[in-house]
Length: 153
Image (cartoon, rainbow, N blue to C red):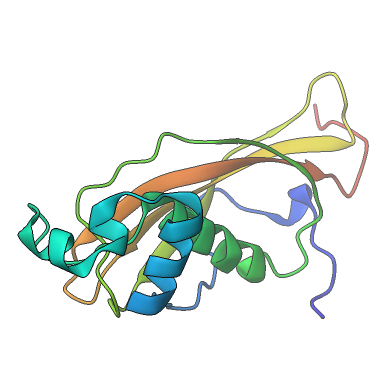
């Protein structure tokens, strides 16, 4: 287990070490069947005739997978609570077995003015497929524990 890291330990622009991942067709269809049953996610014939020319992953499935990868990459960062999800941009579809690589970094670091033991930070990310095409851009806002309760003048 990674040692504890606090808001004070983070740097603007610091990259997270995110592992690549992929979503198989059966996994895509199972997730969509439960949570996003649009036909281009769950019916091969209809998906083939759609503008996508085949099964694509639900954006909800892709975002959930990104959440998992980011949480794994936090390496001991002391998060108190998630505060929000940034707007999700979907420039290209995620297809079965795409190799997805995330570029994620810390930004918008600021100490809470009303609660000096807490800091705010955002992880922004771009997810790309094996062709280098962006398939998702978004981010997560967090409240973090500060190592110190003192503000610096």
